[in-house]
Image 1 (cartoon, rainbow, N blue to C red):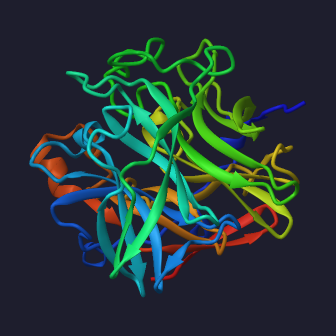
Image 2 (cartoon, rainbow, N blue to C red; image 1 turned 135 degrees about the vertical axis):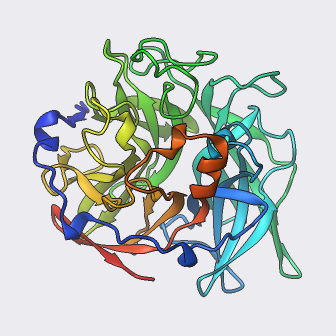
Length: 387
């Protein structure tokens, strides 16, 4: 029986700012836009089945969310998000265009996920379909989709075949996990927190693919919301596939009463331990600002636990106090490199999410942040800048 680990205020009481868990300040010159006409965020590699990053012609294959970098508020990008294909060679990034054809996804936009390259030359892209295709205004229904498409490499051009089927694998069950059918917000959240923006809605998104080396079985980790009475119901759901069918299991981790969303969950195995990582933001804690925006993590002897928080508190990487929102959506790779995107650069900790559009746009990075690297020593971590 799987019993979820609980992230509690007792753990957060151990949290202290330290050099080993603080990212360096990002210099604006170190984050030039990869695609000046578009915002890019929530980056992930196309993995091989052993977890390594897939390479074609000396180029690593990656995906990210993208939206036109219009004059409006950067937070509006979530309502136009598409998955984009990227290539990386020697720290240089190349845009390969939208991963899917227009209108192929079953939602009105495409949110984060993961991808794995199969031996037959196809790529399974696991992603979040949000809203409904053709809807007049954005809604927030979320479900986990697999699009399995042939990977094409022709005369240096890399793309996915546009005729892939987009198949729903999972949606929240309404029992272990709250449904995400609300139209414009999240009933049950505190006053002022139900305006429909990410961070203020129920979650069933960000599927992270993982093959357990202990038994060779495929799993998905999903950012979810538990069926709890409090508005702060963040959880990490686990799903497994048996005989070709995906089934939801009890959560690996719950943050009931302390945090509303545990985003982009993923697992790597290092020195015999299973490291479970996720990102969350300072405004989704209860109370807001209880802990910093950052990468958090737990570790266990097996995929199903028992999990304990890294560094006592769970904090692995936080943004520096001078720039509390400078980066987000960290992802730890098997070689312990850590990728993220440049978020808001502000003065004196001002939260630009709620600033006027022009001011927020001026401070928004919308591109790939400099990579970091982690050192893992059992239950203790430290962050290492790597250019």
